[in-house]
Image 1 (tube, rainbow, N blue to C red):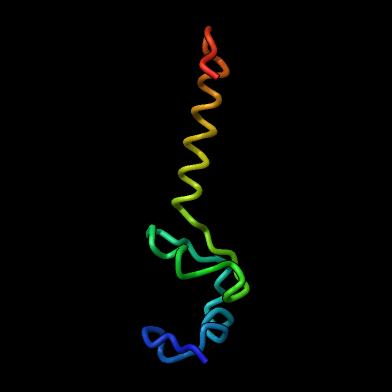
Image 2: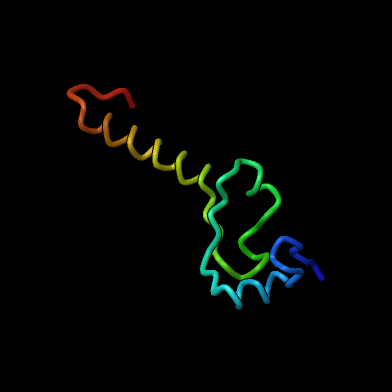
Length: 71
């Protein structure tokens, strides 16, 4: 069983229940490489993916409204 030493040696499942954790923000580019959505049964928010998707969406909207089309 995995232990989280920083949080008093509780198991991840006990920590999630005790603190009523509803999700985790993965604010580092390496964290999504080692943590998955299925690992603890709570959503992980991959900020790298969120920012990349937002940048693509914004770029497509800007070009769609331009007087000329690059696509």
